[in-house]
Amino acid sequence: MSDFFLILGFGATLGALLIWYPAARWRRGQVERLKKSLESTQEMAIKLTAMDPLTGVFNRRRIFESLLVEHERAKRDHLPYAVLMVKPMEFYKVTNIYGQTVGDGLLRDIAKLCQSEARATDIVGRWKGATFAILCPGADEAAAHVMAGRLLMRVENTNFSDVGRLTVGVGISVSEADYPDTADAALARAEAALRQYG
Image (cartoon, rainbow, N blue to C red):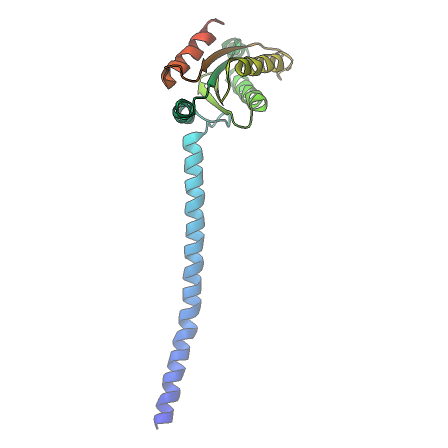
């Protein structure tokens, strides 16, 4: 009789394990899928808060945050940095003649050109409207002018689809090592230099 109860208890335990194990395995699979989904959602949220959806470069917020970090690093390490503001001068004329869709395509093209001329350490973003900002850590006056010259030449030699040739204005601001400055002042100087183009 005790053998019967022993076998019965063993059978019940085995049956419970056969039911529990697949359910536990299924739950672990569900947890893993939910975890991956959450990680993907977090990555997308980070991307959405940092990227300009039209051009695929960083947005104004990310540029400004990066500038604040770079400004503090430059002060600590006594290094220069440059801010370049880039704007296609005929942009609003293009949108008036060809429409916003062509203008959007032009902004994407300008963003790609800025990225292609930027160094690996530079940060490219859309500042506002048709204006892009390039933050260049460690760049002095000479390096900033070399980059601006390359960018101007590249744009002038590009035949943009639907609109042909264009010019861009480039405003340059360089914060030299040991120069009393703020991140806001660096941006303001770059914007003021860009406004000289009209």
